[in-house]
Image (cartoon, rainbow, N blue to C red; front, top):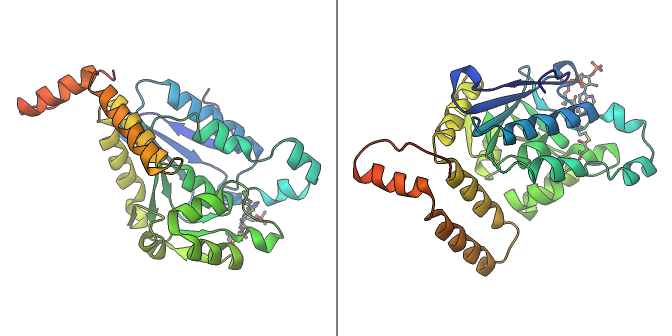
Length: 265
Ligand code: CAA
């Protein structure tokens, strides 16, 4: 499926082998996340996950102003509490996108990442931000609170004090502050954001694919388990990887001083 209305999808983006670029494409609404965006992102991530030729994805926003300015306020203003509750509103962002995308993906945050936009960026494996990026959880100003993980993922990323301040005041955080607070991996000039992120994604796509999934799974488990459970899980996955063809190839390639040729198993 590639006839999308609210997103753009490009495989081997800008000639970067193995990298799928997904672009939120509602620039007039600052890429606000409505239910069509959600449905299309679920399909695009499923397509990425299923395509063995694509090994890393990048999610960004169209236009120079916003990654995404949040869940679509106009759409939400028309819903009743019962609709939100009965539909378990916002649930598929985690259950359909985060949990089902085992391959790596990066958020390239190119401007406002507010509310659901900040929360969507935090669902990625890591964030690279442009120097004009702004992060925030301003839901309180709308009489609500984060609903796509902001109170949980932001707190885990930057700690209680800063997360609490952001949620209670709704203030925005600059890219520079976000880097200091460990919310983002790196900040780059806006003009370089896409090229830089695609290059990083290309590096990941050149790695042994099964090892990439395993590394992602291990780091994520640090958020879900005790240290003991996490360490056991890490050792078991490491031990399983040693049975892979790519382990034999990777170690032989090192010893023979050549590039590895990966099979993905
Ligand atoms: N939903 C729907 N439309 C939005 C939107 C949103 N979250 N954010 C911006 N837009 C629309 C505006 O309504 C406007 O459309 P019109 O031209 O049709 O009026 C267009 O995008 C441009 O926006 P502005 O004119 O407001 O642009 P600005 O440069 O003056 O301000 C901004 C930029 C500070 C980001 C401002 O748009 C803003 O505050 N947006 C809302 C941010 C927000 O509150 N996000 C949280 C939403 S709730 C949420 O996400 C819940 C959750 O936890 C998942």
